[in-house]
Length: 393
Image (cartoon, rainbow, N blue to C red; front, top):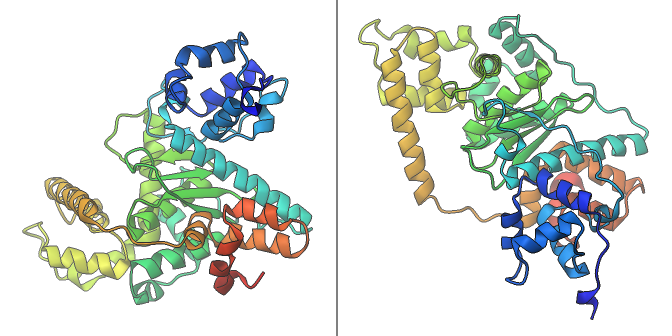
């Protein structure tokens, strides 16, 4: 009986919810049983027919919006969307897949929740200390960022593997007052990283589908966006056709990221580079791998750095880049998924800074247990997986 109860949803809000999810009417209808057609969804949005309560709950699930929002008299104001540095002007928000739109919205909502937590704890959010402009040399910004992050080259070389390196960089970035999220379920061709440069408490996201070394580069690229105060969605491809100004920003952020991870002076001082003959300008695979392992970066990063310093040819770089891409695709196709417990997965997605803030707010009595679990998107049974890092509840 309850399934046939009609729900007086506001038509304009139905349209808003669909469009902000980057979905077409046909795609919405496809998520329903056969009884709901695109024509019926259109009737709901035109106000010519009311959905049932069950159908409205399904729309709430599809659009990832609270059920109550559909009863508002007008559509709420949407979060500002980061600039899409992968698209030409005019392609609009539809260029984002629904999955990416949901992740961007989730990051915005977490950031606003974090600001509210600080207010309830009567604490000031940490002030992000880094700033810069594109009039400065990439090496200048890179040195400034590296000094703030506080790692010496010797410490960087001492990390045992790429996972330890990624954790170290991420922890230091969070220490600068940045929320760092890892984004699941998005193709790397669509997004490698994004940044939200609003202050206080800027945020960034990196794609979990990439290797730890690639994610580290993504962090440094997005950190540069935060320094120059540009919110963005990026894939870092310098060859893609894009508006000149936006392409210039992406190239600049790539250059600063390279200076953070492998400062020119330290890079060129490596014995393999010092002793390498001027001709031929090709490099052995073992030498490239050794440098990549030492700096905890990708092999493509090393070859690109050699190109930037005139130590290899553009043809050599492109050949290696294509080779590494094919190897990446082959390895990904053959890779076995590493089992993850749900609580541990949520920790990695949400980042330590946000997760710890949720726990602190709960312990101080400003969140109920249900609210805390909702922010973390876990169940009570997952809490023991957080105890080692965030303490017993």
